[in-house]
Length: 335
Image 1 (tube, rainbow, N blue to C red):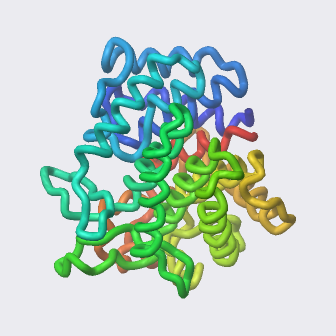
Image 2 (cartoon, rainbow, N blue to C red):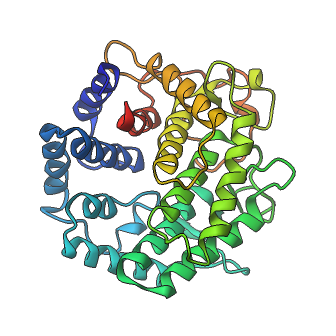
């Protein structure tokens, strides 16, 4: 692993609280993957040390209510193949499926501060992927169908067919039927994450495989058209690249999940795609300072209600912005 990424890992472990948010959980997941890939026992010890401090063992059932964007149980299961972890993850997935509120069209709704009337891309990508993956692991066609249906419903609602980009959600504006504005780059990275994870273990002869793969491939084609000449994907992708700042967090996520898709031959390899990912990976190295802080990471908007603040330099870069570390640690997987 390159020394820049080792610096990020060291900084992440120094700063990571026992109880954090999804940025910390995704960083922990990335550390566990790095530990397995490069045989780094210190990363694995840190990961399980955090879990022991939180729960004295495995996460509790229904953890989705406090963490809807990622899944530590899945990361643990991929690392250990522990059947108890799979059982716990299955309980959580079915609980989410049964208990989560739905829109009038059947879309999963995001629960936030007691309110559940809103669609949120960040969360549904995890839910749909978790249903499909868990369905494969336990041979549940019910879960696989549920995940596939949520992808279709959200694609139909959130994907702008003229640009190919996805809105972050619906219900966050005064007009609750209006979609969130702009093509926020980390939102597009969430789409890539969810689709690649949905397809990772899905058999190629499964009826859900071709439409999900097409959904991913069309999205990738659009992303390749808006990559900056600097190698970054910038904060907003539906405006001129000079109109918004580069975003290392979206870029790191895109690099990792698309490289993973090439490993699995989900995305068809091409010189254009490989060149884009190599260029992005190289520029990410320049986003790490001497102390392991990640630069050029876009702050979280919460629900995106206005794209104006992400135009220009209205919200400047802040070294160490927490969305950067996990994205760089993911991108480190093949470096």
